[in-house]
Length: 121
Length: 173
Image (tube, rainbow over all chains, first blue to last red; front, side):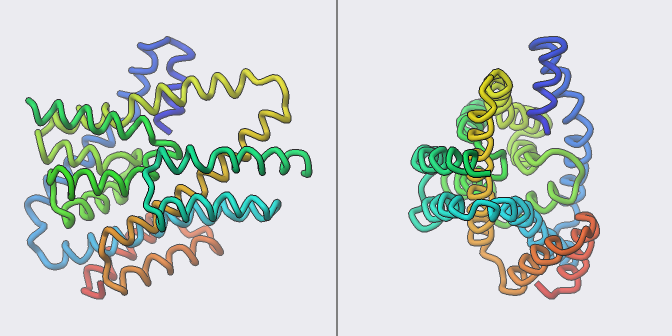
């Protein structure tokens, strides 16, 4: 979303527009999140707060994975693409490669299958 | 001052490889902040992640909080800028490049390829986060429940976060 803001901002006013978009989009949320962190510093000793944060973290990971699974549904329109996704996950988790390497290694396969998908659909 | 500089440089480098957004680099950032630099403890990272998820706003705010922890308000601002500027610039040029492609077939190909990569990276990231958060099995169960629920209903994320706070606060995790 920030990236989108920067794109729009720079279309209108160049670098200054990009900077303005960035500041406008982030300043409010940053203030709120820091306020929460100050509260956290004062109250994180309470067992209830500790537990609640663990619960929120678990839900947070679930929400992230959820967007991944929702996007995955679209890939079933052309099942061979699932090979690319499996390859990405394998490279990232089992072989524990850095993000840059994963992208470099998987990108050729992704482009190959994407070309076929475009031709077919 | 050296700490601030090191924070800026390291986060900027991570932003350069942040294909698929900040979510994709979160596990590596956990490794950087907790295991390599010892900026914060693993528990604090998990808590900052939780706070950033619960608060409104962009995804990178866990990083803002790491900066705030290290160097106060200035740290928060430096960390936020560092994690954004390289990826923003790259997205800007990428967007220009893609809208500039005349051949619709080529455009579609690139979009399909990027989408597949993004799916893989997001799923990888969720898996790695679960592993590095070293969660109790009940937390993993809650994560799975959230994934299943959100696939089949349009339940609001904030409601799920509140539910997570309740379940965790009651001591189930």
